[in-house]
Length: 368
Image 1 (tube, helix red, strand yellow):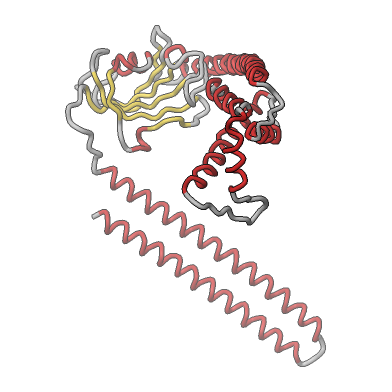
Image 2 (cartoon, one colour):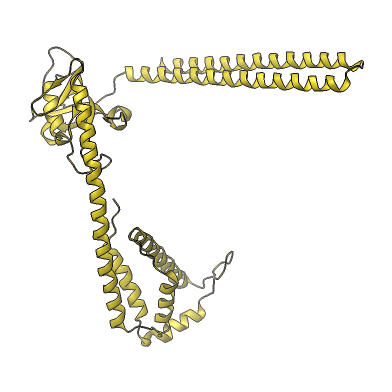
């Protein structure tokens, strides 16, 4: 949802009004500065400044226009288009002491504009709220259907609160937390369509928190676990973030969490297990294998295309010289071209395999 700062807009517009309403007592200073200021009209023209004060004056103008442009652009959401030419004209008239409005008229117009803007903002916010409510109702229905299907799966338990969970891995004899404990967990959160919205695994850094300081679904669910367990939770919206949007989580979202309980009341900083490095090495080797396979396919496809082109070209030449002694020569050239293409393809394939093997050996060497 996009918001606009009423205060910021009012201040910027009021500043415009102040500039427009400059009294004539400053006219001589303003006009003198205007006459001495170098003109920078048109593209590819540079502005030359005599001293730091002229630089500062120009910088003030650029800064003011930048801020005002941002404010004006934000007003487009409310179907309000500010005529920048009139803004500039008002400033020029104000500096020249030739404002077409009195100070009272300036403030009255700004106040009238601000009142109209406030009404448009309220209307827009009401529209956004209605849209969010409609999405939330759709999410609620979709979540309820997902929960009903999930509840029928083997090994799933549904609690009185509506929380659904199943054990992925379980460890006997571990410690279970209470709501008053702190815990350390690894987790992965997804929507019901499988889209991931958060993961401590990706950061390779679990989180520590007080169990009574998180969403109700986690507070309840983690108490069913022991250290070393990994569970999957399906958490209804009323046990998660409710009916309102929360960051990147839409209102009334049913959430799916894979949670691994690492410790209860941890006292030592988390240290990544060594197998994580081995897993990373294995992933690197798999990536190299995939890249080598793809490169080999490209080489084969290119060779096939070149072979086809050579055959077609040779055939055309044969037709052109048919009945002459050159036909045999063309056939020989064609065969030589095909042999060269096949040899090149084989060499390229061998090179790809060797490069992949060297890369794999390097990864394995670093891992030892």
